[in-house]
Image (cartoon, rainbow, N blue to C red):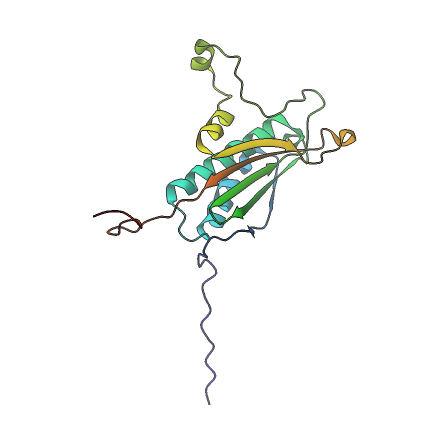
Length: 182
């Protein structure tokens, strides 16, 4: 009798979206050179989500890259031994939740994530920075920030910047969406 191993499903087989799904959190050194790894790891995680529109996947990756860069640039994450944590989950079957956690405010220049509204049109035209949160605001369904620990004596220990994206079912070429008239 010959023993033949049963074939296993490939590691990268996409699975359908479901409420409560969580991907493993990923920790990155607080260095802007790590942004490429953040993007590639997120693409790999999103690849495992069945039916995700490629455009939405790239939108999520772009927002994660901006969040990572902000965390490194404006927090202790960008200092020696700093780190940034990326979280990905689905609170509902049609909602993708992305979160980026930094190491907290810098002592020299404490800043919180906010869109810089006080610029004039001329200043915006010449600005080389400061559009990341505007981009997230335009691309995400919802976004915001909050303290990692919500106690007054723990202020400044870290900030979570999060964004949510609504998943829409993809249609295959040659098929009409459900309910569409022909």
